[in-house]
Length: 105
Image 1 (tube, rainbow, N blue to C red):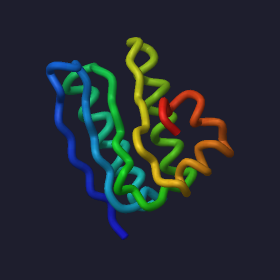
Image 2 (image 1 turned 60 degrees about the horizontal axis):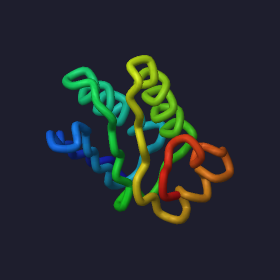
Image 3 (image 1 turned 180 degrees about the vertical axis):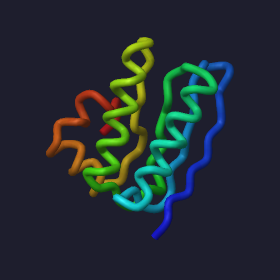
């Protein structure tokens, strides 16, 4: 399956809202990295990564998100994962990433 990404900047909340649909794996992780980096370079602000329609993410995809999290911390911004599906919640919990990347996981 492929990965589809959409983004919009919310001026009121001063944050990016990115939606990920499909799967993030070794073949689509570079696309996610480019998208996250592009948005953040355009405007340094927090990123909400909406995962309602993301079916799967592997360790490569998690690595991309962790990398973005680290780069964003330098300017005191955050990336937050929103509404992950149960299989992704489980992975985030196993890796303890839910503690730093989620507010509602």
